[in-house]
Length: 367
View 1 (cartoon, rainbow, N blue to C red):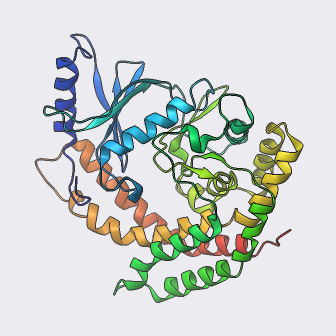
View 2 (cartoon, rainbow, N blue to C red):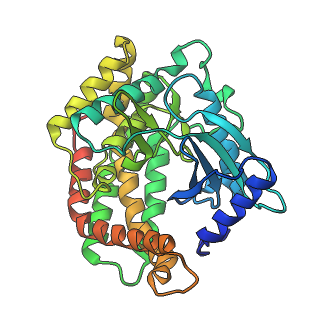
């Protein structure tokens, strides 16, 4: 599906219902309803206990425009994580589109909980889940995730170099935009220049090696937090690499700001990190990840900052038309587009503060 295409969610829901009926997965008395619409997947709730994640788009370039690869990729990760309590339980995977339903999908359990709210209880549960994820390669049956996960995940061995390059690429559309704000351009260039000066710290990651499956996309609604446990969902940006990538993205002021402009107090950041390192239950591993975080922790925030500026240009093209009156669009489609435009405006207003926060991270002393 081309990126600029506005998906007809009502039609998709009807087509999915017909497909499920034809395959004896939906009978009289069952219910199917739209739950969420992300960049890669449209998620439906089937009855009270299941979700169906329909892959409809490939914003991540690693999938080469083939949405069926999104389904295979996420399905592989859920199979690897089976038994860990970290994410959904995979019930069924439809990996090939069919003539009557030209999409692929996963069927999982429905997890009861709330999005991450950054209160201390939620921070504690998320820290415990991330510690469990990051120490998996030390456990029997989960060793060497780079070899166990098929199709293979991107393996990031030089994350500072990669994130710096991606940050530059993400920012370029804004630099090239004729109506770009000159002050924001100057802010971005200053932050990028500061990040360049820290690239030599990448050797700390090879001096203290540890790699694992990392989620890489910790926006608040990619967490489902229950009373006793926090779960990670939406794995299309996962990779094999340093756990500091997850910590940096989780604590990134740009990531946190997406929840109604929230700013995490410094003492809550320290509470999260202390809880996380304790939950690793391994002093040597904790020391290794501390070194990784000191070197790499600011770079996810840098990349997110630059992505945000570039995304303003993309969002104007993708969603501006969807906020206009259109009789063929459902209320949910219009609400989705309007919400995205509101997020765009809010991020523009918050950008100078976010830029200053990222610069502060980049100025923290190295070990």
